[in-house]
Image 1 (spheres, rainbow, N blue to C red):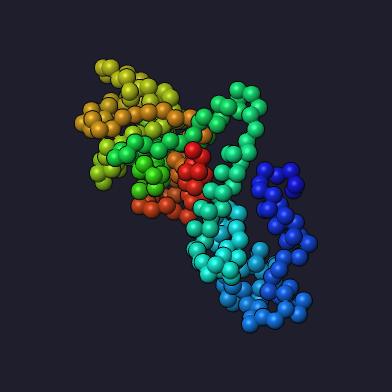
Image 2: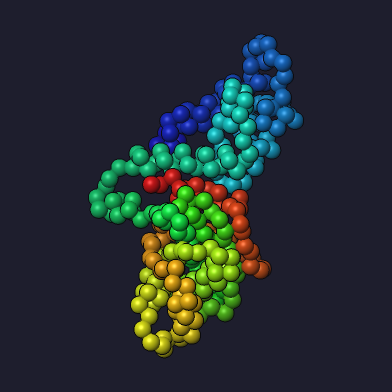
Length: 281
């Protein structure tokens, strides 16, 4: 545990939990500290023991469902009279963790430096960024597409997760992701925008299209080129996979859906991914 890349105070906290020496209200009462109540300050329904705080509390369980680390929300409520919802706790925890890891990352040659350079970048003021990704299972020929639309502050304005079947290849899924995202952005006036994909071949085809595309996916490419020509405020760019994680999460999520899903705020399963991309600057 002591070798894990997390802040030292988090390691000490886990150590104290394992030894059951946290200053929970039940523990304080056992030490004969005068208290008004021993009820949990997070849920107010059960006695505040270490096990309850870290595992059984409904508030804690909501945070853990988002695959994030629960921070000391309890202390804020006790000492600062501050209250946050589970989603706010998730974003706060993930932001601090990624900031810690980013600033404490050690250079280990060119590979490490190149990884740090692959990241999501906010668009210029007044322009939106649409990240897209496709998922493909070569056995079932099924997959999904995901896209997310964010502004210059990194705020998610909209997104989509759409299941697909009958795919020919991974490239097929990537092209359809671009198509779905562009159609959605045009229909809801999310323009001007930068359409960003981690599929370099797709970006190349759309950016330098000359004449008719005679490939198996040529018809889709041609339709996309026509759409882009009718929307001169949209440009197509490439980003490495590590800078496209939110769209990737949406594409993976789409594979388990029965119908298209569209979002106009950040869904709970994306909170950690959105926070992670925001804090790496």
